[in-house]
Image (cartoon, rainbow, N blue to C red):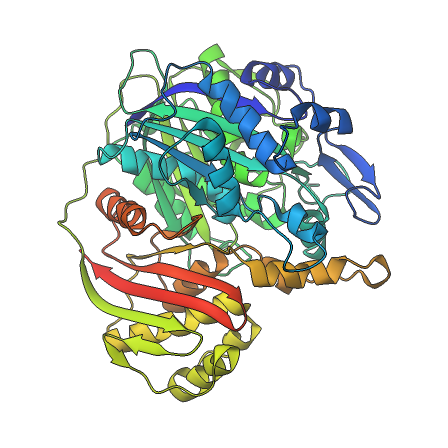
Amino acid sequence: MISVLSTNILSPLGASTEQNYRAVKEGRSLLEVHQDERGVPGSFVASLFSDEQIDALNVEGFTRFESLVIRSVQDALSKTDIDPASDRLIFILSTTKADIEELAAVESEDKNYSSPGRAAGKVAEYFGFVNTPVVVCNACISGVSAQMTALRLMNQGLYDHAVVCGADCQSSFVISGFSSFKALSPEPCRPFDIDRMGLNIGEAAATIVFSAKTSEGAWRLIQGSLTNDAYHVSAPSPSGEGSILAIKDALCGVDVNSLSCVSVHGTATMFNDQMESMAIQATGLSEVPLSTLKGYYGHTMGAAGVLECILTMCAVDEGLLPACRGFEEIGVSGKVDIVGESRPVSGESFLKMISGFGGCNGALIYSKGEISEKPAYKGGSATVSHHIFMDSKSVVLDGESLEVKGTGKEMLSQIYKSYIGDYPKFHKMDALGKVVCMASELLLRKENAAPDASRAVILFNNSSSIVADRAHIACICDMENYYPSPSTFLYTLPNIAAGEIAIRHGYKAETSLYILDRKDQKLMDAIVESSMRESSAGSVITGWVDCKAEDEFEVELSILNK
């Protein structure tokens, strides 16, 4: 377990945790209709920073996204006596699209663009952090995944402190993408309500500073779990299977009656809310009050998992859960207890649950009181059973060169035709997905073993989903030919590549993607090893999967077994 030293929330509702919590208590929200803004034609509902707020938050020499992260981290760090230059501190940034609006603004591919890894690197340089920063890019669950990464690394004794910041800015890139999915509500969202029409989006940054030392009276992140439902890349399993697995694992050793509440994702989309209700009922949580904050902030993406944990801590501290803003009448079939009006609550612990594209799910347990931790998973160091290296010209499988024809995307197509041939979805994938799919398929055919549901997929890269990002930008850059495509937008979430493997082979353990400013093998090994030691995964497909262009890629994957 690890302790919370300090927090910050920076949103349109306020520049501190205290200001944001006060706004929520008072029932305030800045979800409102925006017309022809942020480069998006037509209207949409969102909680956005005003031009005046953006100007006030600006840090000279940094982008809007980087400035937002800096301001949030700065406030949280100012409440501690931590030495930023300590080699026992790790900076973990949770985001889905980071500086994507900067990429959309560049005139050519040669112009400088601050990738997510580089953005994290610039923030790290600003504060004097000395270790390689980690960017967690796991769609909607990124904030929870980032906290799990901090917990695992610190539980292994690798760091004394972790600064976890979740942040995202909104632009035409994201708004048009969700619009293409018909997922946006034309009015303020209504989580779990019978008349819910979809989600709203928001922008924010939220930071938690963790310590490996436990302090009396401090909130502690006790344990958690990450899973995949292996069902679909853009729709949750109707039964909530992946979420059920995550919740049960996170709750191991925890008395459900000790929970003050469950902080749910509550996006107000038809399928997500229904799925969450089924998972809650199946895990014996029907009588525990449910809290959702999307009616105040909208979906803040990479910030959501961090922001919602912080505000839930504040609410439980005061013993008063805020109302589920927008909720009036139950509209899900699973038995749940929605907090329709603010309600007194007792206890000193809560469960945070969340899910996202790519089939990923997460759950965390926070507590201030006495609570039992789940037994540690057993297992020694992992061993490599198979290994593949692939670039745009060659493939080396377990040390032997594979006969290939052509280069780049032509080579990938030939590999599919010659060695795979039984997965037509390959042709619909983006460049990163195709690269990962072909490398993993060759690796698994070499293994020639029955599918293992307990297998995890943990990937690392530098370029995020740059090829799909540029394809999506091409769909929305010309207002006279504005046609955002849901299939194109989906692959702008790089963790989809890991989700594709899980869905293809029925893997139910963690699927994660991390972005680094540079390939840091020591850090990558630490993340994978801590994951395997802290989870029930029996094996993992892991490695570097960078794809800068359709004809420029490098993949190095291994299968590790406990």
